[in-house]
Length: 123
Length: 110
Image (cartoon, rainbow over all chains, first blue to last red; front, top):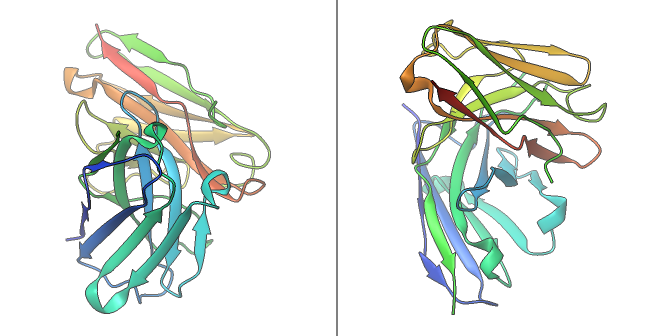
């Protein structure tokens, strides 16, 4: 059974750096083709993909946020960490951790999601 | 402005069928597989359809997906009150080099 759980601050101030940790179980991020990523959802708005890190440390990051995002993994701890710099009130959202399974053609979809963590950016 | 366009809302009576469209372009839906997610109110999104038309084992066959050209469609038959939710399409955009979600469609059971 795959599970993912997000942890981190619920409140950050503008200009601060947000660090979120995804702790997962039920799979290994050293397994070929597997990835773990992040998706966010501002209150009442649509989903937005942020970043993904693969089993081999390859990374994909949203071009619109590339200058602000870093994604890393610690396979020994079964964790993925997302860092977002220069936080702004518009970054207020629920941040979800997601699992991307192996796909023969390398296609993307997210079959397991964490419960999400609401991050509010306010002074 | 989402790269993938969905109708804001659709509705139908219990037992009826609804379809939700997802319109994209040649750099996303046109060349990559589409997935669909359902988000019940106040909950986490859940995968409904992947690879255009495949269902995870726990998803009933009331849910179906299809793709033609640069558009995809999610169908829900035998509509139930429990189907009231937001539905999102998603796919990789090879030009943007990003995974993109649709704008979301709210399904209401009349």
